[in-house]
Amino acid sequence: MDENNELILAMVRYYAGDPKRINHFLKVNAFGKIIASKEKVDSRMYNIIDVATITHDIGIKVSEEKYGSSAGKYQELEGPAIAKDMLSKLEYDEGLIERTMYLIGHHHTYDNITGLDYQILVEADFLVNIYEDGMSKEAINSVRSKIFKTDTGKKLLDSMFDIKEEK
Image (cartoon, rainbow, N blue to C red):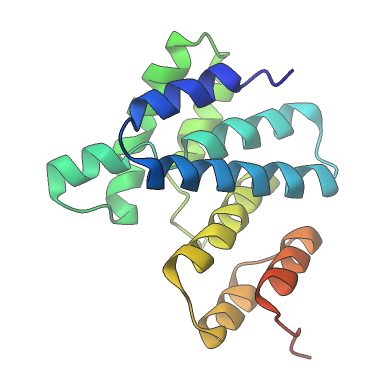
């Protein structure tokens, strides 16, 4: 059984009528779990990654309502409090909630990635965003060299987008 199915259902209700957002977080969640598993993270970090990938864009709705934009800076600003409320209601432990809030509040900030959970969230989100945004090969190569650090993330990126590692 997946212990985070109730969270997934809560997020589906949160995004009711917005299948694009629902599909996005489900894909990011799947990639996050694959990377976490192949990178052999411990069970605590795996669960943080699972929860963070499900909730990472939770701030989009409020950002669009409040600022008329889904820009990353607004998501990072608005998302943590919404996630805290949802995760608290679902009775997640405080440490997991705090780390998830941190990850949501930084998942569009790439200049100081601290922690493997943060790295994996960013890579999983990029794997989905690259496809959804139709990025060029040149842009993908740039993201690969600047952002991707895990072996698993790089292998997924290379295979998905037929990237040949530049030597």
